[in-house]
Image (cartoon, rainbow, N blue to C red; front, side, top):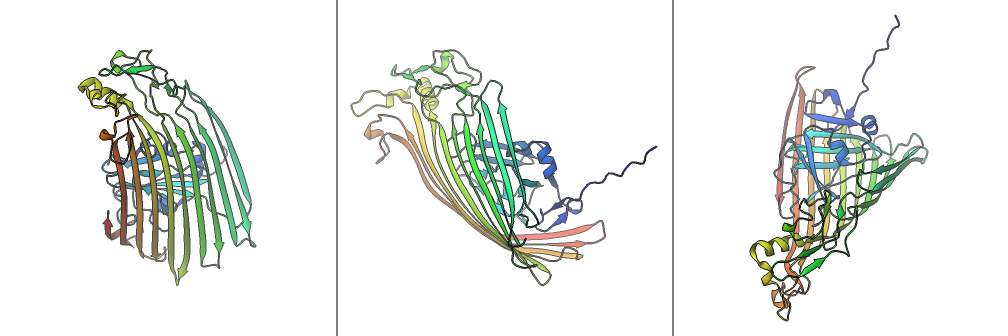
Length: 460
């Protein structure tokens, strides 16, 4: 009988409690997906790793009024208050982080491309002591691979994919790690480009509005597999070892995504009750106006880590800039109000003639967020340990949603906005300030006592 080598698990180091710790010794509800597991499961997006975390669920929505890829709305342990994507509503209830940087906006989190990632940490909530706002039901942290001054490394991946009943997509991605300055500095560059294939058809057809008898035709917008998305992005990080006690790591991540179409389907397409004249389509809609999202964003960050005596000091700065231009078809709204309540009689041009009452929306969203965190941590091997810090953040969301009816009479339009039946124009700012701390004490080698608190002030 041959001797069998003992199989042991590698030590997994996590930073969920804002200090480096062995996963097996962290006394909180924490799930971790390591690099090997992410690669084995071919994880490339949020939806891929979310399925591997039992307490996590999610929804996706595009920027502005567009319904499609772009933003991620995250929920943990079934807590769904907050984070419903409404621009005037409450903040999300799950905090999302890229390394030390918050990536949660008022309407949801950035959808980070999952390539060259070290691990994902999911902390079931509440996590209000160390993470504060937007972490009432939990926190998800995406930890990237860091620049490594010890040696050169590079890699790439190519993928082609096809959707049953849909189109063909692809993913191109690669990275390079370059040591510099006699191995005291390094830069790591990551890039990706992908095409998400469509699977929803916008079928050609007409729609008749009951009150006026006006017939609308969507020939200009009909297209098979039209809910496509093209994304390109880059992530760059540098590491500077000033000496053996202080390190500076600046980082920049930027992405541009252009998406078209609708991720929803209409089961009534082709039925007489919906005013259509052609056949039913299972994964189809009949929309009559442009639907798209043009989403551009970047986030710059800098992390400074060092020691004061035997205490670890960390400062993190981040700044997000995101612009989204979008459009959406809203003609179903106009049709059903006309069909059920005769509202088509109220929409006319400057000559008093009835017009097509269908609405369509043009929207712009401008997001800005700047955050700072300064914290100190006592030595990890002490029996009594402390983590304490300051956090302050300012974010703004400038919103414009213009609901239009083509040819609408001036007297019916929003003053100063031709053809506009409804206008949402809002400038929102949210300020957060916090002081936090947590004490940990080892009562025995198997029993730890934690006590923490957070004072915060939020203003909207």
